[in-house]
Length: 161
Image 1 (cartoon, rainbow, N blue to C red):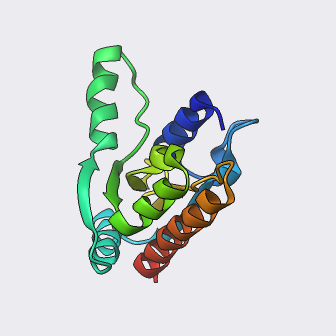
Image 2: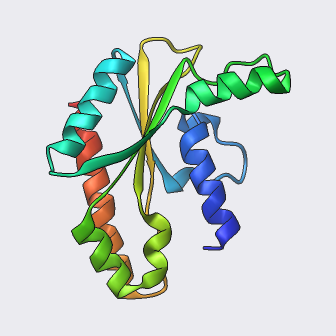
């Protein structure tokens, strides 16, 4: 995957609301999206708990929704993209080490990120998404990134149960 495509996937992971909203040609199958009825705070708290329950530490919480609201005003934008939106970034030292020992270029997937957000026209529906770590050229790197994808899927599944 080219660097530009990787950046596009990262942007889409944080800024695209639901699978049906992907524009033609977007990397829809590179983003996993799940949704649940509930409050933003409850679902975000469940994701945080599922991450921390595995002994992992959240490094950063990016308040993407607030940032878009703030910068939108400066840009003269009137459309509200999210009612609420945060991206949680974290890492697993053991999984990341295995991936990077197998293929150092997998550094691009660290830290891992899970987005939690509500769209303005869907109050009460909380979306949770993450980008799939795509297989690099080495099979060892692909195997290690498969473990990362299973971790992300388990975290989201636990949080939304």
